[in-house]
Amino acid sequence: MSGFKRHYPLHIISSSTNRTMADETERRRPNILVTGTPGVGKTATAAMLAERLGLQHINVGDIIKQHKCYDGHDDALDTHILDEDKLLDLMEAMFQKCAADNIGIVADYHSCELFPERWFDLILVLRANTTILFDRLTERGYNDNKRSENMEAEIMQVVLDEARESYDVDIVQELPSNTKEDMEANVERCRAWAEQWVKDNA
Image (tube, rainbow, N blue to C red; front, side, top):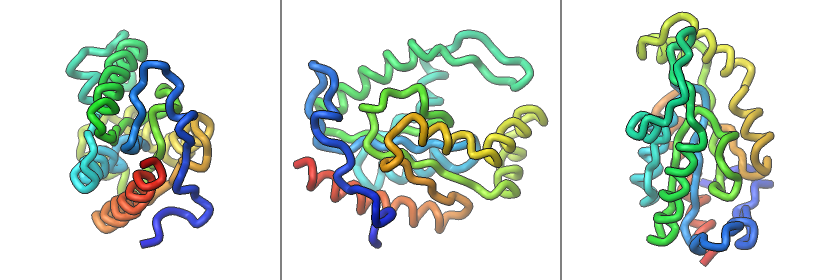
């Protein structure tokens, strides 16, 4: 397994770039964000990464629900409006604690532009075939408007473009997520990358 694209730098971010806060503990384990349209397999992939790589899994959606990080409700899309400030404050504390405990993080969420660049060393954007995605969203019970909105976002590669605009393009990786075999391959490539990151940042 050769890891990601050949031009992809294994030593992605220098120590000075990673540590922009005076009180942030020096990290020796990588932080990864798994993102993509709802239904592409983010949480399942992140959970497998956490297990295989010994990382702390942060399901951002669960944090939002548990701590009620809401600022209203969108009835048309049947979804809550996010209170970003409250969420980021909660996550900042989690990231600092994990850094202090020498634990890396794998977080998953359907958006990525709201997170500080310094948090992550690798951004995985999962993509799914639209036929597969349609079936997955239908199984979740999404209403027509919510399903159509997400299908359009995947077709227009909204999350991928968002990632490329929000982070250094060298750390953004677009990966297929249609089958269990895809997930296994993605996790293995990420494992090889993480091992090299640890060596480079020892």
